[in-house]
Length: 180
Image 1: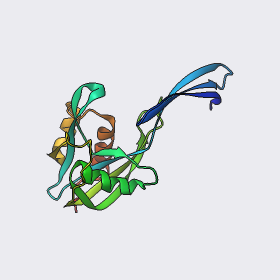
Image 2: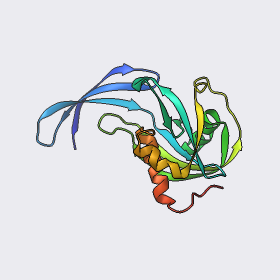
Image 3: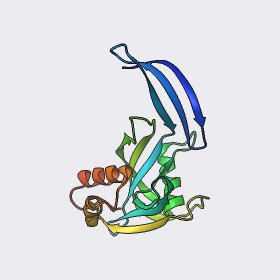
Image 4: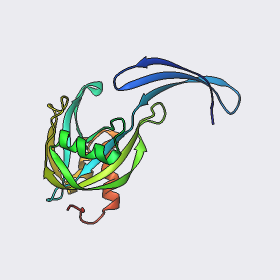
């Protein structure tokens, strides 16, 4: 454990806050920790009736590249993670799932960030679109579940939440995917 001696907020933005904590290590030495505070999020493996995975392709400014990802998004204040799944899928892919199942969860970058991602499986898709202001440049890509391991191995799917989510799904449902 590390004892927090002081904490200073140095940035308070729309999506993240950043603070610098002064800490005392178990050996008595003092050092600092730079910590990004980010609200919890959801990430969703979406399977359609034809056993395709629905991925989103979108440009990501921090890496200056278009990435292929599982749908994900923030949990609004007071919102239940499962409610966030329904809202985000309507906004990003234009579907509402009839069945939502928890697959687990994980910290995105615990060495410097507080963000926790709740991982879900969504099936039984029904068309239902919500228009969100920042989803106009998102393209939905349907990929047969059998192609996912190669997309990960080749680096075409290269973000941590997508890799973690898809591998968790493949590990849990080693036989035929469980689409409703």
